[in-house]
Length: 421
Ligand code: SAJ
Image 1 (tube, rainbow, N blue to C red):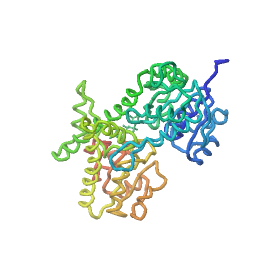
Image 2 (spheres, rainbow, N blue to C red):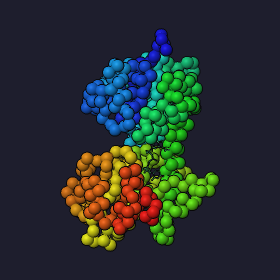
Image 3 (cartoon, protein in one colour):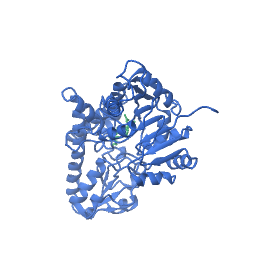
């Protein structure tokens, strides 16, 4: 729109969420200054290239960088809107304690360049109450500013929590079209953040308070984790009772109001396996089902490993193909992947009898070094391996026809070959 003043935006954290978010905001015509602690990441982006794998992101980043709408730096700069999208990992105490130190470090950087009228948005998945701690962190550094929820009149700064809910592989599409929670510290903050998101979000932007928005993000992923745990528990019961869990789930899901998810070798990724622990940490006595679901999904990974070991020991002279290392189908993300953990454990125990097939890998991850395991293509695995263990439901594995695997011993942890059950 001619003459419309678009806000200058600063996005802090240029990872899996921050970089696509920065690129989409720039595509909407805002001047975006991206900040990351890694000089390599900054240099890569300023060359119009990307350091992560995501469909169509390379073309978009190249375009907005070439148009001068996205620039990256390790230093923060003043802006009208600040979006914090830094990691919130577990602390290293072994108790799944949320570590919000990266968020607070970003909040301190933002505080030092804030001016009246600016908006600060936290997107990182965070324990309930974090946005208020960001507000307090800013207030402590900027006694000259009136912060929302701490002043009677109109605050100088707007502050909101606005989580994303994108699927890897569909991030650009989902950042644009998914509905979004806009959680303001005050209703006025929510309205300011809403106006910003409507510049590039076509989905419905639903305003609420910051705590509700923080909990909503955690609840979405905990809901999925609990439902996956139900499927995984069913599969372990089925193994004990000699049942075909895939057949049972297929039949049960014909009920008009039943939708049992799919068992797998555990739950991977940096979201579903992490976020529920943020709820448990905040309410350890009450969050019983949520905690148990996490423990069940982790137990499933060890169950699959034990089952696979027994199978391999029963075929002592045969080669074994582990199909897949990624944490989920059709993407090249191997972080926090149960498949990778299981395959590496089998490689350490059975050495060069183990072949690994992972179409998204050009080399095996470092933990396979010295085990004797080999990365091979699917044709080699089918020719040389008598035991097949699908660990990831990549499409390229699903399409292997029955005649190419009819004489194999199969442990199908993903139910990708219903005819083989
Ligand atoms: N999985 C199963 N069985 C299933 C579904 C998933 O075993 O029926 C496993 C997958 O193999 C994978 C893990 O669960 O190992 C998580 O995969 P996912 O596709 O459920 O989730 P993510 O981590 O890729 O993305 C989730 C999404 N959240 C929900 O679906 C509620 C996404 O919308 C979020 O934005 C993302 O977490 C996030 O960033 O929080």
